[in-house]
Image 1 (cartoon, rainbow, N blue to C red):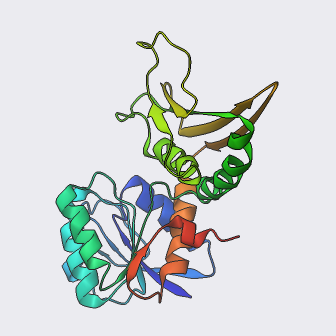
Image 2: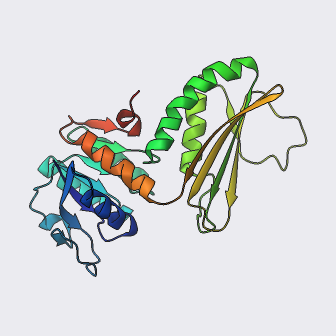
Image 3: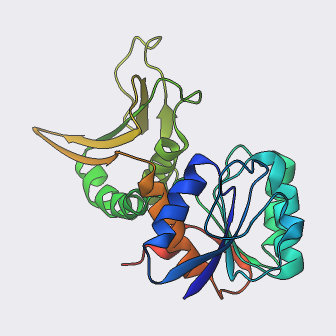
Length: 252
């Protein structure tokens, strides 16, 4: 049974993961860290990571950028692998992550959903078949009205997956409102929709002559990201130092 520490255990995602781990017979939560102590968990919860005893085999992080430096220092010192889910890291912090990966296993991904990461793999295969046959590629992503960035990181990851299969020959078009011209052949259109409480929808459209093929992923709750994080923790425990992502978890 894999022993997990939840870094950011009292946040929304931390609580979703806590519940998910409690129902999974392959993992157990042995410790949690959160500056907010207003929630009682069934495992020891510490205000700072330095207080932890190091019983865990792997750390799952859903905290905030301010807590990442101390997290990395702890994991390197204790030689603990970490599933790093916190976003918005500075360039300096990303360099620290890269440096830490030389000493411990770190898994970092643009999207923790197993379904999205399966889609990333499928898109490469579809692209190799369809684009030589003249199919255009467009991506539409939809999120709630509180999301501040556009397009989403996942939409860009999907575009990158397609472009990787195309030897990076295509450009991205995020706004055609100022273009009074036909669509360029070697471009990928990316459109962002914001409204309501949409958790996350991503649609990749391959449009050809008289036929259209669509790949779509819909997230109905944060649980899909929690599930991916737990599966990533199972995968990462015991792995040698290095940088990993969800493509390593989703194998076929």
